[in-house]
Image (tube, rainbow, N blue to C red):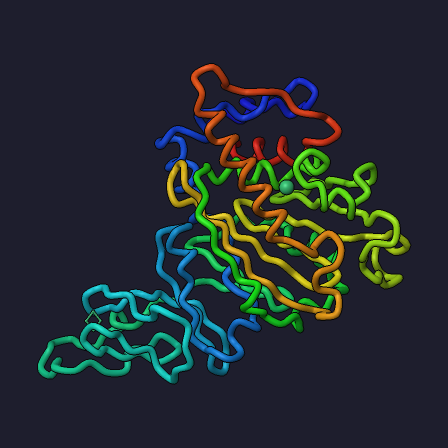
Length: 352
Ligand code: FES
Ligand SMILES: [Fe+2]
């Protein structure tokens, strides 16, 4: 795709042409690049009670069924049985082996073939091809990332480490009551566009607008992602920042990180809300929420207080926008140079 489709100068640029949101072939072309990206797999606290965790979202994102296993270490394995291709783990569980439910082939938690009924006399069996393949796993402060042939992660984690590395993210605890999964009638990139600007907050999110100081809302761009910093209005809930933080002295209510293509890491004083944007088709998207709690006493407060309400407000807007960009009249618009730098950055990434 043409790299100058989106002018690098935001004051001259036009937004993404509507075919990026509506055309099946353009969609498939964009999604095919996801195999080269790192994706959020899980937080380690999701592997405390259970030690086998299938990653259904990875199948939607890159067409690859994967499963996390934990024994003395955490691994990301293919979740496809090497016999006739059945999916092995279908839900999270505690187990000492992986056993295929189709004909009973068994693997160790390291992916090595262990046992197969009725295979006596099969020549050259078992061979290394009967083991489960493993995938790269990257680990940062309890967050696990994986991919098929990932190379595009650039300096994202260094960026996060420098800014919020002071938070004890590895000790945050998974709270399954905060899990959500929504299927929306909109293209995934419209959901990301909407996330990447706080411009709409006064118009769309009345309550959230009361928590945040709109005038001080900041957007910072970096290679591979965008950070939005929400400043608390008055004495609304904010982080107790250590002196080592570059933001020390400010009343920060939220750090909203987006990492290409569809990972949102929203840090609030109560902990972390992870949002995964999972394209299902050109006009259907799944949004998955996982919550990891740091300080339970701060749940329900401030900018991260009522995420369900904010999410419902965003989904309404994004679904309506999807209908709008399907119009034969609309093709593209212009950007606000002060409020839409994140959206512009995303569109540049999508078209480069
Ligand atoms: S497909 Fe797994 S044992 Fe047959
Ligand atoms: Fe919003």
